[in-house]
Length: 286
Image 1 (cartoon, one colour):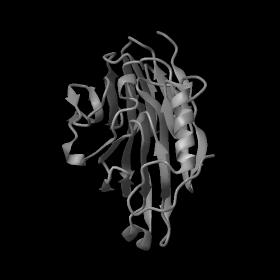
Image 2 (image 1 turned 135 degrees about the vertical axis):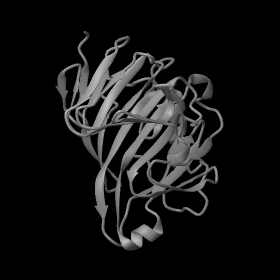
Image 3 (image 1 turned 120 degrees about the vertical axis):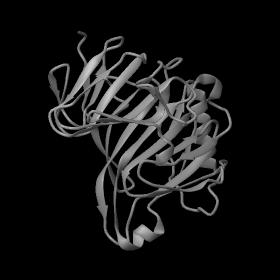
Image 4 (image 1 turned 30 degrees about the horizontal axis):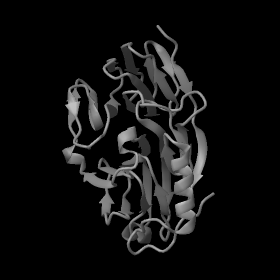
């Protein structure tokens, strides 16, 4: 069997929210359409505080926010104003230019709250890189689930395991949440060209080899692998078709052509960007 690539995430802080970020990495720039993977670590916000990601821009990507605990308010320059609950999918396609904010809702800021979840970026196929922006919200109950013999699979986006999510992805995609009870196993098929596994919590093995929680394991192409849970295990699978060419990432911008990033930086710096209604604060260029 081909050796698996293990990516240990680096620790980051995004506007006060602690993050583990395994992707992008020098070992691997993308997994299918996924070019960015943030694990928002379990954080208890006291009364009077909360996460507050101020207005910032994107191009060339879709963002997907998925919470295990807590709530977030999503607002964007398309006019979206949406409360996101655990198990919901918050899906925003930036295209040529979108700005958005994500923050703890005011009610929870007053009482205090706990936040835990994931945010990923999916690079858009080249024909869609500069297309129109779009936002859609998919409540938890609309996502398909398979729950059998101690193994629960929820398809967050894309398709796999005979499940298809309603999230409007633009290329073949696999993004699944997997929960295994102790001593259960899941065979991961080679249906998608590129795949990786991230264990959120628990002890597990891949093909009989122990794996470290909170590391991204790049699975060998074309090979089925077996995930076995030594304890209750919570994980996600990401993957899909390989990108149609390399992507550059600069700050919040993703593009196949570096000129598009330079143009976007200049437009944001000049204030020539769509604005989130009712928002005045923004994150400036680094």
